[in-house]
Length: 105
Image 1 (cartoon, helix red, strand yellow):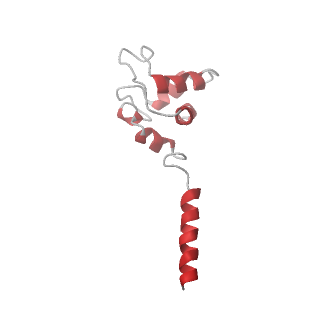
Image 2 (tube, rainbow, N blue to C red):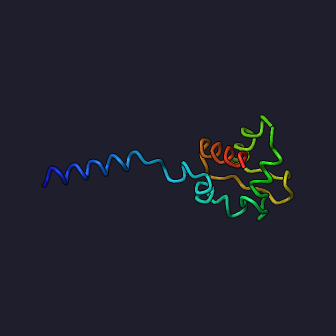
Image 3 (cartoon, rainbow, N blue to C red):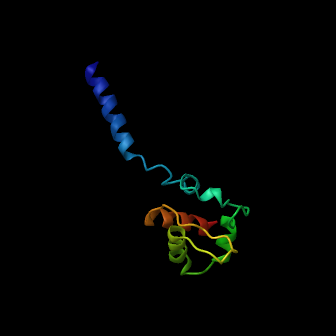
């Protein structure tokens, strides 16, 4: 019985380590967790533009992914109106994932 219990605990531990970080495979969850959805929504303007409007504006722009990832991290102003977007506490990898998802919409 003890050996079986140890096997179950070991399997559960390995499974926990194999799971991706929260939001890693769900860009909307990542956006929500990082506070992006306080100002943006997928399909409607909130304070900032909708993600679909961003995707439409930058469709086909090869420089957009890098430029937008930097903007997510450092903030920006003027492209979508006078209200500035503050810098966001996201890693470079998180910013790239968010931007790739937004541009795919």
